Length: 196
Image 1 (cartoon, rainbow, N blue to C red):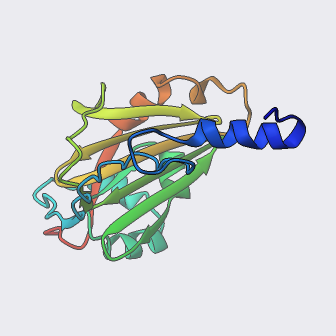
Image 2 (cartoon, rainbow, N blue to C red):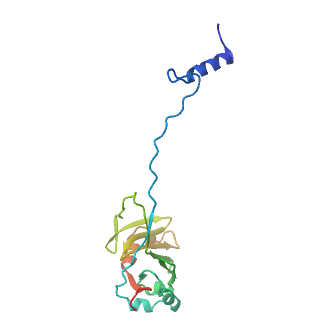
Image 3 (cartoon, helix red, strand yellow):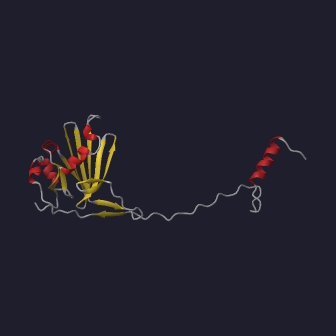
Protein backbone atom coordinates (compact mmCIF):
# COMPACT_ATOMS: atom_id res chain seq x y z
CA UNK A 1 0.00 0.00 0.00
CA UNK A 2 1.36 3.42 -0.94
CA UNK A 3 1.25 6.26 1.65
CA UNK A 4 1.59 9.95 0.93
CA UNK A 5 1.14 13.39 2.46
CA UNK A 6 0.97 13.75 6.27
CA UNK A 7 0.42 10.04 6.80
CA UNK A 8 3.74 9.25 5.07
CA UNK A 9 5.57 11.98 6.98
CA UNK A 10 4.34 10.67 10.34
CA UNK A 11 5.31 7.11 9.38
CA UNK A 12 8.84 8.19 8.44
CA UNK A 13 9.20 10.22 11.65
CA UNK A 14 8.13 7.25 13.77
CA UNK A 15 10.55 4.96 11.96
CA UNK A 16 13.41 7.39 12.49
CA UNK A 17 12.81 7.56 16.24
CA UNK A 18 12.80 3.81 16.75
CA UNK A 19 16.09 2.31 17.96
CA UNK A 20 16.25 -1.39 17.16
CA UNK A 21 17.35 -3.70 19.92
CA UNK A 22 16.65 -1.45 22.92
CA UNK A 23 13.00 -2.45 23.43
CA UNK A 24 11.76 1.06 22.77
CA UNK A 25 10.73 0.85 19.14
CA UNK A 26 8.67 3.88 18.19
CA UNK A 27 9.80 6.00 21.19
CA UNK A 28 12.65 8.52 21.42
CA UNK A 29 15.64 7.24 23.37
CA UNK A 30 16.60 8.84 26.71
CA UNK A 31 19.65 11.11 26.76
CA UNK A 32 22.78 9.55 28.24
CA UNK A 33 23.24 10.15 31.96
CA UNK A 34 25.88 12.70 32.89
CA UNK A 35 28.21 11.58 35.66
CA UNK A 36 27.68 13.65 38.79
CA UNK A 37 30.56 15.63 40.28
CA UNK A 38 31.38 15.55 43.94
CA UNK A 39 30.04 18.70 45.63
CA UNK A 40 32.70 21.37 46.23
CA UNK A 41 34.11 21.56 49.72
CA UNK A 42 32.78 24.37 51.86
CA UNK A 43 34.89 27.47 52.22
CA UNK A 44 36.67 28.14 55.49
CA UNK A 45 36.63 31.63 56.97
CA UNK A 46 39.96 32.43 58.59
CA UNK A 47 40.69 35.43 60.81
CA UNK A 48 44.43 36.15 60.71
CA UNK A 49 46.39 37.72 63.54
CA UNK A 50 48.21 40.77 62.19
CA UNK A 51 51.78 41.73 63.04
CA UNK A 52 51.46 44.63 65.47
CA UNK A 53 55.18 44.97 66.20
CA UNK A 54 55.80 47.48 63.40
CA UNK A 55 57.22 50.89 64.38
CA UNK A 56 54.63 53.67 64.16
CA UNK A 57 55.44 56.65 61.94
CA UNK A 58 54.49 59.36 64.44
CA UNK A 59 55.17 62.19 61.97
CA UNK A 60 52.67 60.79 59.43
CA UNK A 61 50.16 59.98 62.18
CA UNK A 62 50.31 63.55 63.54
CA UNK A 63 49.21 64.93 60.15
CA UNK A 64 45.91 63.02 60.24
CA UNK A 65 42.83 64.89 61.48
CA UNK A 66 41.64 64.37 65.04
CA UNK A 67 38.62 62.39 63.77
CA UNK A 68 40.88 60.13 61.64
CA UNK A 69 43.20 59.47 64.60
CA UNK A 70 40.22 58.62 66.84
CA UNK A 71 38.93 56.07 64.30
CA UNK A 72 42.47 54.76 63.78
CA UNK A 73 42.54 53.64 67.44
CA UNK A 74 39.69 51.23 66.60
CA UNK A 75 41.32 49.75 63.46
CA UNK A 76 41.56 45.93 63.83
CA UNK A 77 44.43 45.82 61.31
CA UNK A 78 47.72 47.73 61.11
CA UNK A 79 46.68 50.94 59.35
CA UNK A 80 48.79 52.19 56.46
CA UNK A 81 48.59 55.74 55.05
CA UNK A 82 50.13 57.39 51.99
CA UNK A 83 52.92 59.64 53.25
CA UNK A 84 51.93 62.78 51.34
CA UNK A 85 50.87 65.82 53.43
CA UNK A 86 47.79 66.76 51.35
CA UNK A 87 46.48 63.18 51.34
CA UNK A 88 47.15 62.77 55.07
CA UNK A 89 45.23 65.95 55.92
CA UNK A 90 42.29 64.87 53.73
CA UNK A 91 42.22 61.26 54.94
CA UNK A 92 38.99 59.74 56.23
CA UNK A 93 39.38 56.49 58.23
CA UNK A 94 36.57 53.96 58.67
CA UNK A 95 36.63 50.62 60.49
CA UNK A 96 34.65 47.40 60.84
CA UNK A 97 34.98 44.18 62.87
CA UNK A 98 37.84 42.81 60.73
CA UNK A 99 38.80 45.68 58.40
CA UNK A 100 39.87 49.29 58.16
CA UNK A 101 39.87 51.69 55.22
CA UNK A 102 41.25 55.08 54.36
CA UNK A 103 40.12 57.39 51.58
CA UNK A 104 41.52 60.76 50.55
CA UNK A 105 41.11 63.19 47.65
CA UNK A 106 43.58 65.79 46.44
CA UNK A 107 44.51 67.38 43.15
CA UNK A 108 42.10 65.40 40.99
CA UNK A 109 43.10 62.07 42.53
CA UNK A 110 41.18 59.78 44.89
CA UNK A 111 43.20 57.25 46.89
CA UNK A 112 41.51 54.37 48.73
CA UNK A 113 43.34 51.84 50.90
CA UNK A 114 41.53 48.86 52.43
CA UNK A 115 42.95 46.24 54.79
CA UNK A 116 41.28 43.12 56.19
CA UNK A 117 42.41 40.25 58.40
CA UNK A 118 39.54 38.05 57.18
CA UNK A 119 40.25 35.41 54.52
CA UNK A 120 38.03 32.93 52.67
CA UNK A 121 39.82 29.65 52.06
CA UNK A 122 38.50 27.34 49.34
CA UNK A 123 40.39 24.02 49.70
CA UNK A 124 39.63 22.89 46.12
CA UNK A 125 41.13 26.06 44.57
CA UNK A 126 44.94 26.24 44.38
CA UNK A 127 46.63 29.33 45.80
CA UNK A 128 47.20 32.08 43.24
CA UNK A 129 50.13 34.50 43.33
CA UNK A 130 50.17 37.86 41.61
CA UNK A 131 52.79 38.50 38.95
CA UNK A 132 53.57 42.06 40.07
CA UNK A 133 55.53 43.19 43.13
CA UNK A 134 54.16 45.73 45.61
CA UNK A 135 56.32 46.60 48.60
CA UNK A 136 58.45 43.56 47.75
CA UNK A 137 55.49 41.16 47.88
CA UNK A 138 53.64 39.30 45.09
CA UNK A 139 50.61 41.35 44.06
CA UNK A 140 47.77 41.54 41.59
CA UNK A 141 47.70 44.86 39.72
CA UNK A 142 44.68 45.70 37.57
CA UNK A 143 43.29 48.64 35.62
CA UNK A 144 39.55 48.89 35.01
CA UNK A 145 37.43 51.86 33.92
CA UNK A 146 40.16 54.33 34.84
CA UNK A 147 40.78 52.82 38.30
CA UNK A 148 44.19 51.28 38.95
CA UNK A 149 44.42 48.87 41.89
CA UNK A 150 46.88 46.57 43.62
CA UNK A 151 46.14 43.74 46.07
CA UNK A 152 48.76 42.02 48.23
CA UNK A 153 49.36 40.33 51.60
CA UNK A 154 51.51 41.99 54.24
CA UNK A 155 52.00 41.22 57.95
CA UNK A 156 48.86 39.04 58.16
CA UNK A 157 46.63 41.54 56.34
CA UNK A 158 45.18 41.59 52.82
CA UNK A 159 45.56 45.14 51.50
CA UNK A 160 44.21 46.78 48.38
CA UNK A 161 45.23 50.22 47.13
CA UNK A 162 43.16 51.99 44.46
CA UNK A 163 43.69 55.18 42.50
CA UNK A 164 40.98 57.00 40.57
CA UNK A 165 41.55 60.21 38.60
CA UNK A 166 38.95 62.91 37.96
CA UNK A 167 40.23 63.39 34.39
CA UNK A 168 40.32 60.44 31.99
CA UNK A 169 43.63 61.53 30.46
CA UNK A 170 45.42 61.83 33.83
CA UNK A 171 48.57 59.70 33.45
CA UNK A 172 48.57 58.77 37.14
CA UNK A 173 45.65 56.39 36.51
CA UNK A 174 47.10 54.71 33.43
CA UNK A 175 49.51 51.87 34.10
CA UNK A 176 50.95 50.87 37.44
CA UNK A 177 53.69 53.53 37.70
CA UNK A 178 52.09 56.05 40.07
CA UNK A 179 50.30 53.30 42.01
CA UNK A 180 53.62 51.60 42.82
CA UNK A 181 55.18 54.95 43.84
CA UNK A 182 52.34 55.58 46.32
CA UNK A 183 52.51 52.01 47.60
CA UNK A 184 56.17 52.54 48.51
CA UNK A 185 55.15 55.68 50.44
CA UNK A 186 52.73 53.79 52.70
CA UNK A 187 53.54 54.20 56.38
CA UNK A 188 52.23 52.35 59.44
CA UNK A 189 50.36 54.69 61.81
CA UNK A 190 48.80 52.28 64.32
CA UNK A 191 45.55 50.50 65.15
CA UNK A 192 43.89 48.86 68.13
CA UNK A 193 46.69 46.33 68.61
CA UNK A 194 49.52 48.90 68.59
CA UNK A 195 51.69 49.27 71.65
CA UNK A 196 51.38 53.09 71.51
